[in-house]
Length: 250
Image 1 (cartoon, rainbow, N blue to C red):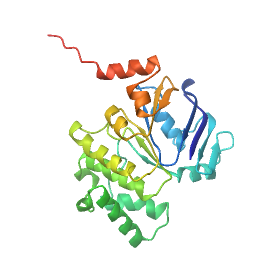
Image 2 (cartoon, rainbow, N blue to C red):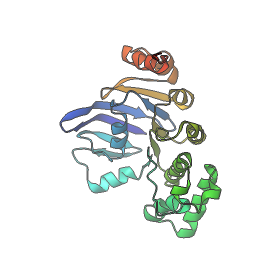
Image 3 (cartoon, one colour):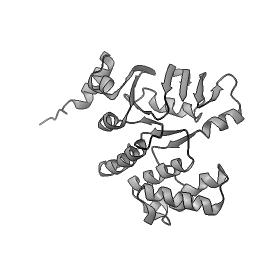
Image 4 (spheres, one colour):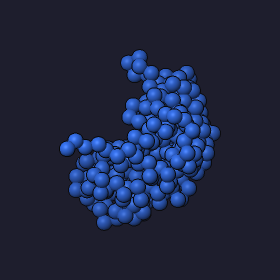
């Protein structure tokens, strides 16, 4: 369903992605983990051309875009096959919760207002925020805003949902409610690619885990293969740091 071939990306002549090759099957929940600076978010943003790759091709469903021949039209077509849930929500502050979800339906999908309202209210029920429809983002907690962001992404009925560290901006007590919503969506068979630092969540929800470091895919496989029984030393080092007891000076 999704094929990334030789994706390369540099910033200020510093390579960030070194020729990434990844295949995602329909219905897969692929979770990308790895240390900060490993290129996880850059790879995710390249998938829908929020970052333009320096080299390589991206295919979603039966549509492909190659960096060498990409046009504004082909990039727009590719983007319409994806929906991104951002780390910092990216909601319109001057619009209500309901209007935030309706916006993409009205502008991108050209759905009429009444139908857009019905779809959006149904999605708010799915994420447990029906009673917040007329509130503004500033009136919501971080976890609630992220759930609105998820509903907004689902409204577009994308081929693949992209999550960029969906819980990293949340207070610890709000993380669980967002992960619970993502897990419910995963159970519905929607294809997802999730960049996260929540290793326990990755073990529970992923069908495939990718471990990235220094701009390359170090290891890829089932959650057990990568997170429980990793083969590569770099993966083992990363996981051992996560489980290592913190040291305190007395």
